Image (cartoon, rainbow, N blue to C red; front, side, top):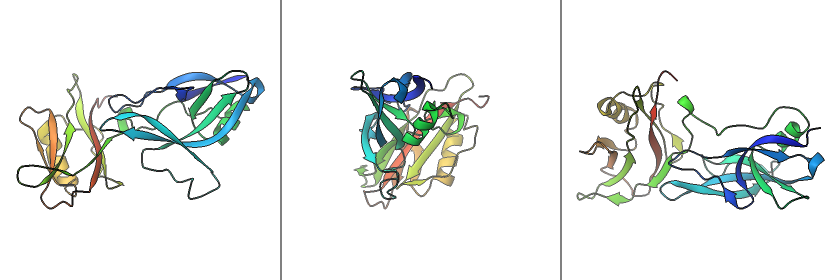
Length: 227
């Protein structure tokens, strides 16, 4: 059996490979197997810390045989396993379950090597916000930043409203903000009315009758239809 196998590591010892700018950052590292002193500490949920941007993870242990625990705490949590070593002080939180790790360590199917993604390798980590801020008219509002497009790039929105996925955008995204707003107002009207700011740096959603407690998770990213 192998003494090391590759794994997508979210945290090693006390160092987190934290998400930056909405994109999860991990590291493919060689992690020990039981033949090299590895100790399997169990299954965990990696739960993103959301402070307006993703700033890392908390890790919640769970029992795969307990249906209540085996359900992800939120839409954006992923299953990881914790592996420590009886030879060093290293502790790894590795993408994948204990069962997947055991299979990989025995020479079977490798552990997952990348973060779950949407189309065009867009990471499934939108920023979440409670629509509790109000404009001058008392309407509840939210805001999404608009990226600067690279040459050949298009705007690609993805989002969730109160825990439910919103309608998918066209696979190639939208070449300009006008087309993007047509999509948002036609397909994401349940959230509110969508407009852009004068400087074209943000998209604003306005709720004329919102409760002030709705949660919108979403992002607009730059994608390339040719990829």
